[in-house]
Length: 272
Image (cartoon, rainbow, N blue to C red):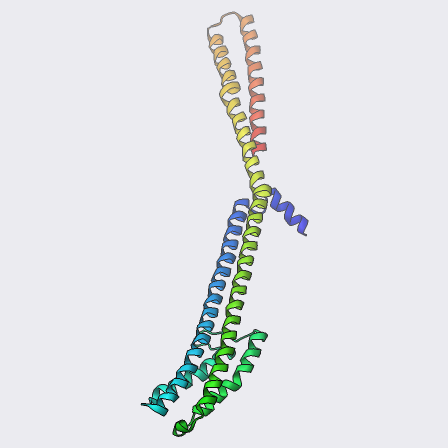
């Protein structure tokens, strides 16, 4: 089956080689653009996840700072509650994903292990600060220690996310490079096996057209000129024997002209 398809493609009887080339270029362009768009979307997701993970460090510090303010100064309960909600929701989004913000679900086992290590410290911070009536009785030393451990683990997670993002970019770059090389090979193959034969065929057809033009302008016109000359002489010639001789010459010219016509027809048939 494949041999028949290839033979038809080479012969050009069932498929136009130029359309094949255009179709291949279009397909390769679509594939390359799709990969580029996927790469950009993936980089955007990674950047967003890293940004949210980085903000978690700031939020943990903001919560501890707010508790200190409530203990020794003016307390902004609204600010504290908002920071706690963001702190909790962002941690869930980083692991489970969030369609609204565009963060995909975490699929890295090593990073997930660090999130599991992080969870007890995050729970301690949230549970300790959840009851605003008990803020003044919070053990600030334990809270600060939990926040410090949270920061250490979160720094590790941010570094892992950054490394994973860089590896994804490198992988996509390799895929794009391989696809570019593959596209180049496809184009080279098409040029050698489809375009070049078409060009050679056109060159042969052009040569045949030149042969036809030569027969038209030289052989055909030459015989027609001789026939006209014999015809003119026949009109004015009075000697019967000379007329018969001229007629024989005329018939020879007609025979030669018929041969020229046959050659032209054969050339046209080969051309087709």
